[in-house]
Length: 101
Image (cartoon, rainbow, N blue to C red; front, side):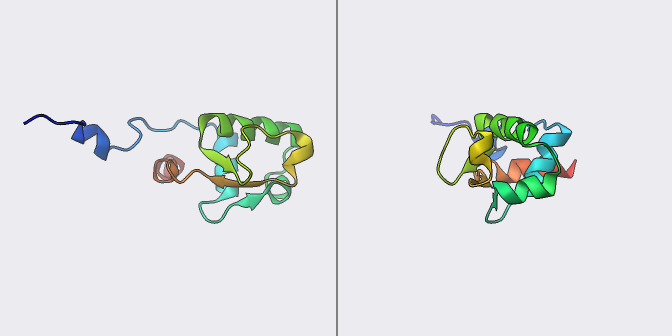
């Protein structure tokens, strides 16, 4: 019998554990795994400069861990306060495990 997909790698999820630095992990906790958060709320919660926050968000957007409501691939400092951010549901369970460590 020939298999069309590798069953063992399918059950493991992404295949590798996400490695997050402290800022990325803190930002993911700030966004939360629920309905998401606005950029304005993130700026208040994270107590980071807007430029640093944009850098970390753009990194997470590039990787695919975070999504914007408007489906933008990158955000600027000017757009940050108006944008809504949420965790990509495809990575949610793997990111939860990574944040527990």
